[in-house]
Length: 173
Ligand SMILES: Cc1cc2nc3c(=O)[nH]c(=O)nc-3n(C[C@H](O)[C@H](O)[C@H](O)COP(=O)(O)O)c2cc1C
Image (cartoon, rainbow, N blue to C red; front, side, top):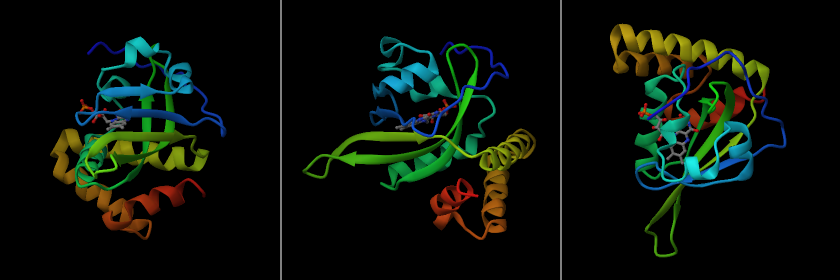
């Protein structure tokens, strides 16, 4: 997948912006709302049927996506901070709520992600956390990174069981 070289230009996500996308079972994009295109700089044609990883920023630790997929596949909703890469190499921070949508008969319909802006304080805490997780991943691997993520949750009065609550609370401080 062709991705741009990341720059240090940040795109602003305002408090009224709600960036929505939907994905199939493999995570390929099946729907994006207009604000998604506006912020990412891609046209709908460039996004549809592409993996969501088109947005992946190198500052994102692997463990966050491991946690995301493990929980989605278990039918659980995930709330997580994501730094996303735009078409021109700029980036934006969001808090994403990702869930499974089901058909009336209970079968899988799609995955839905709703992304909103984050506070300065959350941005500072999560950037520092993610930078340390990336360092740990390259030095010691993903299991060590998972342990470090757990330690962060515990420091904030949580565990993996209450991951979503911990992330939500960090965005209100
Ligand atoms: C509905 C949905 C939304 C997603 N949104 C993003 C996103 O905004 N940014 C991102 O980097 N990955 C997102 N992902 C995760 C990607 O599918 C992928 O796991 C991630 O980008 C890591 O890619 P990689 O394993 O190829 O490095 C989303 C997945 C789903 C199912």
